[in-house]
Length: 172
Image 1 (tube, helix red, strand yellow):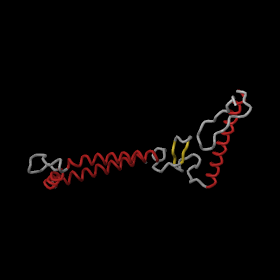
Image 2 (cartoon, one colour):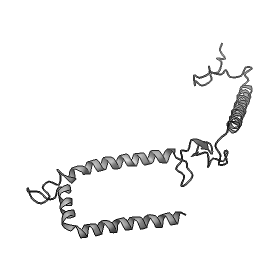
Image 3 (cartoon, helix red, strand yellow):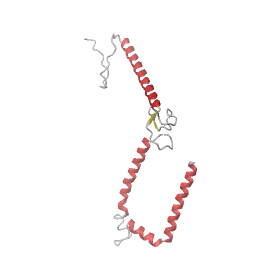
Image 4 (cartoon, helix red, strand yellow):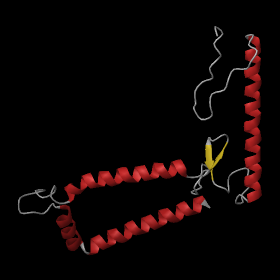
């Protein structure tokens, strides 16, 4: 299918170029005069005298437009589905957040939009995974506290502070 689209696209491009070339040949004086006027190369002040006042002044604007087009492309590339050839927005992380996929390509959705049941199941699985990680961290913390001869486990910082746990001062 892609090969056919490419052939059709190349054929259309060649046809457009041929039509423009034939039009130019049939109306050479008119087209050439129009081109000279709009690019600023025909002037009273000499050859290319008004180029920078005409077409040449637009070169910087074309550079700005090119930069904006490049930025838009990279923004789309960052947020679209990482499945090759898919232009949908990829707002479902997969593989631990390495890929952003649309609902059609995400393995948990199997090509259908996520239903309430799927969302609830995935939420439950994530909470279970986080609880298992928390339990394992508590187990390791208690093991380290026992190795160092502490009777009490290392105290936890208040929720949301982001501070590291502080061990009790043995000197009192």
